[in-house]
Image 1 (cartoon, rainbow, N blue to C red):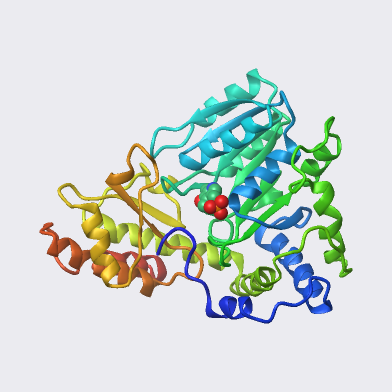
Image 2: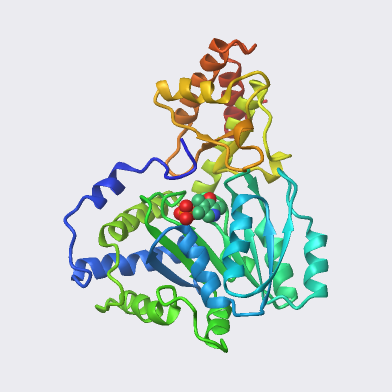
Length: 387
Ligand SMILES: *Cc1c(COP(=O)(O)O)cnc(C)c1O
């Protein structure tokens, strides 16, 4: 139950274990082509250009920066935690002039502050983190993307902890790049960097004044390959991670079968019920309100007087693996529970019941069943309109 790698569907793992074919075998070309088509559905970007490259989510961040940012470009980084700061580090490498707007822990950056920056400076691009996995804060990308359009600025969304879990409508919202890594809500073992670029992003890249500084990331190398696979033609630049791509096809088909709308709703309802369960056990959350809380993970402070590592150790005895804190300044005061991908209410009930027992054993004053009751009540209220 960590925020990535998540628990993978058995069919996905089974697909990973199939005999590795040639990267130009007809079956594999078909799988790769299908992945490209299905990515457009998950991203809600019928006009977008998908890229599938071996690497991690960080490579997807780096690839967007390498192809779209040139020396001395102005870039606005909107940060809600650890991964926002990472984006600034990445963009700084390309010689851009970066400005970072940082939210307080558990909050989002004010829209007005973003607009003032965009109005006063000619930014080429802005970056934002949909769900910052260090804080569990969820940003609403739509109004920020609309502001970016108003000021003729590219928008790059780090969706590593949101794509295939949170609502995203890339084309409708006008986001220029939406990127992720395979091991989070998209449900494939680590190793794939995935992104979809808008037509405008591709134009900006085509009109660069200088060549792309990273050979491996350069879209000049990847675009012909992606286009060839989509047209079901053999092609080669760097050997694709065959097994991971077959696994991606399997996972994308599972996602397509569930339907993005249903999937987003499932994540939202389970996350709300889970937070209600934790709140009944007197946990406080890093995000300051429900409106800006992620549906893919929850970040909660340890209750006062409870030894965090002892708590996590007790859960791990029940086979429940949670993640510690990630923000350096608060690392030991909070923990994180991932609930994305194939997560079900049963998974979250197991977490809550184990947490209740562990808290009681550690002498924390909660009553067994309180968290579970709140969880059940919240789910039933939402699903059956029982008050
Ligand atoms: C996990 C994560 C990353 C980094 O992804 P890696 O695959 O670990 O490189 C970047 N951004 C966010 C929001 C993440 O959750």
